[in-house]
Structure formats: structure tokens, C-alpha cells
Length: 330
Image (cartoon, rainbow, N blue to C red; front, side):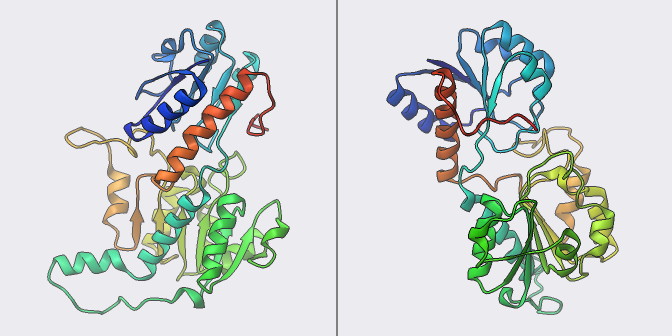
């Protein structure tokens, strides 16, 4: 079997090579994303494995079909980059990695939460300036708070268990209620989630229904002392509305591992380049906002799992076997 992998980072190469050796496969890689300009690199391959934030456009599927490639195995969770109509029209099957390491993102959400609760960003800024005073830095203890989880799937469920173990009351809103979380959280309506949460952490998929789910109206329902954490997908939160809410003191702060329009920014070294970073710089300048460049997934275990799962899925489909990670966009 021959596979072309796109957007490959150096840290993925060891896992790729180990899998290729074990499965006697030929794998070629490129650091470039899968686009009209790079799709020809897949000539002679049986499957392509991308991992990117930019959309895979209609002409790419047509070209893949021309090359005889019927498998796109994403090594990421989000599949909003896929044009499913084009994939289906060209008889291309698509898989994703639904749970590469729930702990990786869950621990990132906890990190942002604790950084904000303890005012560590503001504290460090003051200390660099020689101010070691305590004014305005009094913190909340997590065991006295209600943590709300938007989307209690594999990652959200892991988040819930972590906060529960720290003594917090945990509530959640999800279309699917998981009985195995009955001893960990209480399911509530979306409105109740907004009004009751001291910390609201997002772990739902990005769909048409969840795009800008946290908008101005939602932010108005939150406590003025609440924190908003987004380690899921950027467009779930209306960034302009969030900035306005922070300006008005409608919520206390935000921890963001992902934002709208991060493509071309997060994951890229932009030093010395002319790039519009006004929105990002606005967030970075705020003492009550913590930002990381979409690295919630980025742990040694998660990287290994994402590579191996995507490769395993591609091999299963190539061999005509069923694969539980097929996605259709429905």
C-alpha cells in the first residue's frame, strides 16, 4: 500500500516510519496541506492523509478521483474542512480520528481555567514591571465553583471527570446523554448551562448548528464572574461578540486554544512577516484572556495516536474492511 501524507510535522515522522515498517507500506510526506497545488503529489498512492485547518476544495476531490484515490483519512477530529458533496460525488470515503487522546485537550482546558482563576498572567506581567502587590489578585477555589461542559462526549466527559475530581459541581449540555457520566455530572438545558456555570468549557463538534453558538445573546446570559474556555473549534465562539463582552465586563475572562480565522496564524512562525494579527494581539494584550495556538491536542501520546489511527483507517478501507471512523457530514 502507498500513502501520501500532508501537513506532516517533524514530530510525527517517528510514528509514521514505525507504522510503515510494521505494515510494509510506502509512505511519502510533505509539510504542505492538501490543496489543488499539492494534490498531484498523491499520484500513485492508494490514500491521502491530511491534517489541516484549511478547507479541501471541490477540485481536489475531482483530481483524487482521476488519480484513482478513494480514501481521505483525516488525522484530526474536526471534519468541517471536508466538502462532503464533492467527496460523495467522487466516491471518496472519509474518516477522522474521534478520540486521539481525550486527556490532552481536557488537561489544556484545565490549564487555561487555573491560569485565569489564579490571575497568573496578570501576576507575571506585574512582577516583570516590579509590582509584587496582591491587589485584585484574589482567586476562586475550584471546589466552590460550578463547571459547565458544552458537549460531554469523549473529551467533554474526560473534562467533567477531572473537574469533578477537584471537587467542582459539574453540569453539562449535550444532545446525547451518557449514562456512564451519571455519577459525574448533571445534564441541563443550554440556557441553564449559561446561567449556572462559573466556568463554561466547550467540547462540542463544529457544525452548522454550533457555529457561533456562543454569541452575544449567549454571553449576556452568563455570570459576570464566569470564565469561558474554548479548546474545541474557534467558530463556535463569535469572537467579535466575545471581545465586546469582555470590554463590557459581561464575563470575567476567557481561555482560548482556538479562535475564528486562525488559519494561517496558529501553527505558523510569523516572525518577520507582514500578517494581520490585530485580533490575536488584542486578545494577547488582555490580562483576563489566555491564548494558546491550537495546541490542546499536542502531546506525545496524542500525536502517536492520531498518526496510527489515521493510517489504520486508511489500511482498513483499502483492504475493503469496515471502519468505525467513517464520517459523512450528516
